[in-house]
Image (tube, rainbow, N blue to C red):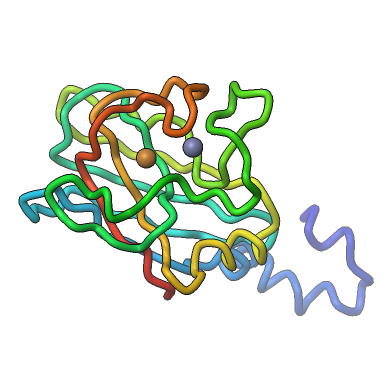
Amino acid sequence: MTCAKLLPLAATALVLSACSTIEDLTTEQVGDATLSLANGQPVGTVRLMNDGTDVSVDVTVTGIEPGQHGFHLHTTGSCRAPDFTSAGGHLNPTDQSHGSLSPDGKHLGDMPNLTVGPNRTGSAQFELTGDPEMVLDAIFDSDGTAVIVHAGPDDYSTDPAGDAGSRVACGVLRAN
Ligand SMILES: [Cu+2]
Ligand SMILES: [Zn+2]
């Protein structure tokens, strides 16, 4: 009912029927990626969501070592095995330093560590910093963007990559 309270009476009946679905209608999936290991085995999916205020990254993984894993957007949409270095460094259109604990941080592509449980699965939703237009322009630029899961945790401060170890899974984001 709070939804209808904000509206003139004449419009109430019309809007009441739409109220329950307004949130669904305004959050749209704008991109996705399949995460794969160096041997090609798929281990997860990433969905890029835009609610009009923020772009967020929804991730689900299955078949990754339990523990904390550095999780980032990397600057090039390329996942060449076995080391995935083709993805380049972190997505960083505003030339910041790495990490949320750095005074000059953080990269647009820096996200909190991804927690994988003893059953080797994990899921999380992380908001990216910045208005959706800027964020999506940076992600879907001419060379694209990759999502990377690292072997170890990001310390949120060591430049340029948080000392998160090797790249164990990679996926190229594609616009939906
Ligand atoms: Cu990374
Ligand atoms: Zn970074």
